[in-house]
Length: 249
Image 1: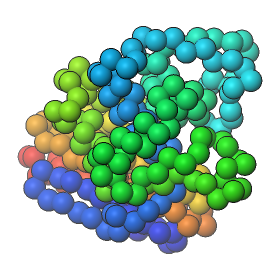
Image 2: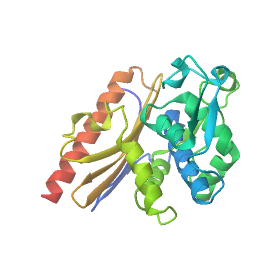
Image 3: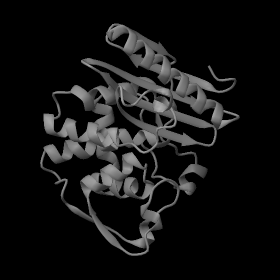
Image 4: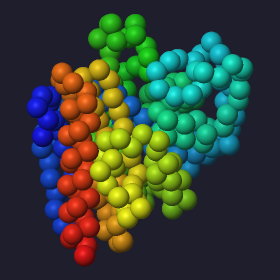
């Protein structure tokens, strides 16, 4: 494990379940974007929105941090599915904030509550430093994130088409320097979402090899050195990868 930091792990394998501090609350960082993804597709399935609905992205509404939209020079319009995609694959904070406005923070939190995600709280937008100074932060837990991953992969509450789209978005994740970094990604299917803040490193993912599936969530905070957290998550990913390959063969 890492030399410093508070570590939480939840892993569901075909024949085993591992949980260490899985119910403890952690700063969510960008893992809170997974419930936003789920709520977007839920509203689309219920007809409250269309994934093809256009959203205007004015320059004055953009925020920094991760993503690409803040760097564009002109006002643009994107459909909701594109915003959901950018929110996940490049962790775009501007896309995330516009989605929170479009879907409604109360609706996103309502989904979390309905799924019994006890530690998952959406209390602020991304890059809202005033809210942070006032003590508002987003939180989640490894077990809550594991529940979300399983919903994306196999929940009957979502159509086969919606699950496929969500899984495909996660599969095209651009940040693969944690859980998947020591895996042979030509051997396995990986769909993951990272999160990071100063002193915080998270990753979660769905791993598939043949007909075997694994669901993984690793959350680490109180790090003195973020790189040590990344290394720990990479080692956990490699351990799960080796187990899945060995167990299947």
